[in-house]
Figure 1 (cartoon, helix red, strand yellow):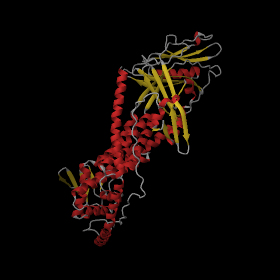
Figure 2: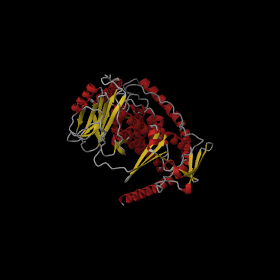
Figure 3: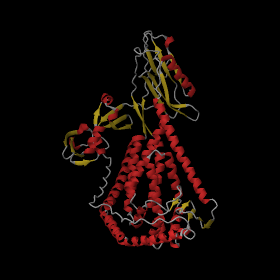
Length: 627
């Protein structure tokens, strides 16, 4: 259950990440089709990437540990705390209620759609199905079916509407709408998914408007049709309907100049964030002890009759594990928890984690993980004449008073280990003293018989982020500073006013290793304008059409509506100079962006050179490894 909640949180975070990337970088660009695939890819990436887990194994020295249980009562009864289970259960109930409600609403929307289709005459033309209804509904399309009320519009207006809906049908926009609805059902608790769905639907309208105006000679007449359709408030939820409340934004996008192709660099900015997500949350570090000679300590005054061994092998079933856990609790008041259980196709154990506790004290922990079946091991409980209780894991035949962690076969023997904290070489004792909560990043490099661990603390990371760093009068990046061996530093000056750190190294040597690693170029900074983004003129509110048929309905109301429409069209005509001024402002804004776009072109060329350098660097490393 906990793993499922963590998965939902990770997926929700990725959904928010893709939404903000679209909102701040792509929303105002005219790459409508590319934006469509970006938004859909964002949804599927958000549900699949949290399932990708990379494993990193760290081999450490084996350290025998014995615990003295003489001070603890042997028959203490431990009451289990179920608070956490109740919290998870309450969250599960809330999640199921919300999901069930949205599923019912989703089904009701389909039922409403079928009521619209039922009993209506269908006209077929090419790959489209047309249904002319008498109800006062906004025009919409559902896959290849287009529904409209021809009595509400003139011939030219109806032509504009049908061209728009044909685009929705031809490009299967209904699939996008249904996918976004399903994601809203699963992630209903995440507020960003509702904004995400709105962005998808809005972008689909941009696509349909853009494609439809290419086939229509009078672009302004199309915009008037948009405004007229806004008077129809009734629409079907799961369809592509012509009416959208953000009509002003659609008209603005219709009149906006096409974005330059060089702006497409914005799409790749999401990649570093995804890489950071994987390295931060999707790497599972497993510490395993190196295989070494087993150490057997002679028990002090141990009576063989007081030794109890609980054996676990590859064929041990889940029921047997539960029985062993029950016996340990009943006989010794020890809480045994078996987790991380994995089995192969033969139902053999390939991974298991064992936690042994007595009260608030931890007795022992053991974990084994691999692709092959586990070796047999045992939980050894012994008590001497003095009442001392000893708990150990063992893997030999006696399984008495041993400390032997089961590891994968043929584990490599680490002969040399180097530890660096903030670039300074330290001992294992220094590593043990560091607070795990203060660790920002930890990287482990293994080359043949040498192991290197590099740790960066939060305070050190904060200092790096707040200052410009210079090594030997050359400005460097964070990665370069983190590779610097502090033993080579001759002098370091920190200027709090200028927020700079200047480092001078001995003999100009900066790096203890990876000296030839290429440095990526720095992207240009977007310009800061004194002017704001041009704002389109305020459009007058279109009059609301009366209900019913204009021929059989209230003729007086329809006559007043036609008069109001004439006034509305006159007001829109007066806005034409303002729209032309708005277009000029947009052209001026695009012109001011040209220098930045040129800088981006230079940056992209440098990135290509950097990629070639990285390929050569990795090729050289591969050749050195083969030697």
